[in-house]
Length: 156
Image 1 (tube, rainbow, N blue to C red):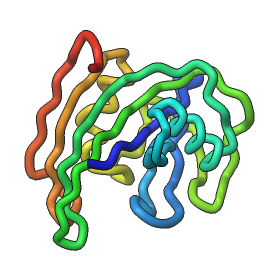
Image 2 (image 1 turned 90 degrees about the vertical axis):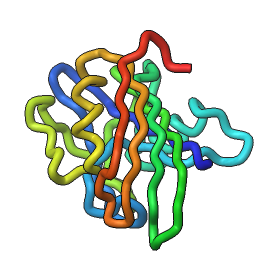
Image 3 (image 1 turned 90 degrees about the horizontal axis):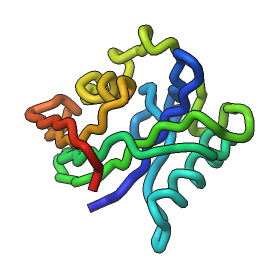
Image 4 (image 1 turned 120 degrees about the horizontal axis):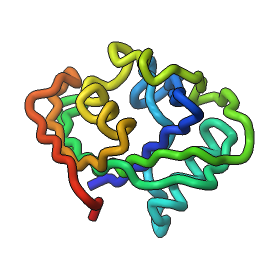
């Protein structure tokens, strides 16, 4: 199973999303993050990916969700565990890279129709301060076949 990180910067009533410009998720708004390198902790990957994708170094961040995805890409099953974090302190200014184009959105104007379909199911709860554990099964067209969302007191 692949493990990945996903980070959302927060400032006042805004959330930073980034348009994926190439590769997996191209054309979708999302947080920043990616796969753990061998021997890397979740937190190390979170910092590295954020630096690479938007030239920002997270300083104050905390876990907000753990989501397991059962997906199919090119008819091949894949399981991914995504560690979701929120961040309200960082160094650097969000900057476009070859991979991501960051943009601030008001929390009431999140473009869910241009994001992964699962985001609308759990991101609002995370932004309301709830800890979320979830699982989603997506078909080969990235459509949700089934899901389970739970609010928890801690992420283990």
